[in-house]
Image (cartoon, rainbow, N blue to C red; front, side, top):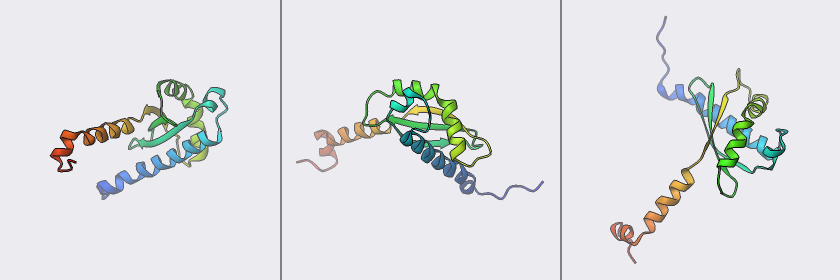
Length: 132
């Protein structure tokens, strides 16, 4: 058997592409209300990122409530409706097998806010040479 000549860069391109496709499909599903679930239809979900496993069998979907707020009730409903959402994604994205969806809260906005607050601290600003 001939050894693979793929570089690490080309090996990871497919999961990135498919992650973007799944992200767009989920955003469209939520925006247009393509899943017939009354509780899910009331949710305002922002899909911030989708990370695919290398074998494309699993997708970690990072979500946040539109406008902020506590993501726990939203995550509970998304996990309950994951099979329906997986089916809807399968119809939207042309893949051999639809990935299993795993929903996680996106904490990057909270992290960015923490860094911003730290940078505005007078002690840090002085260290950075931006003291008033």
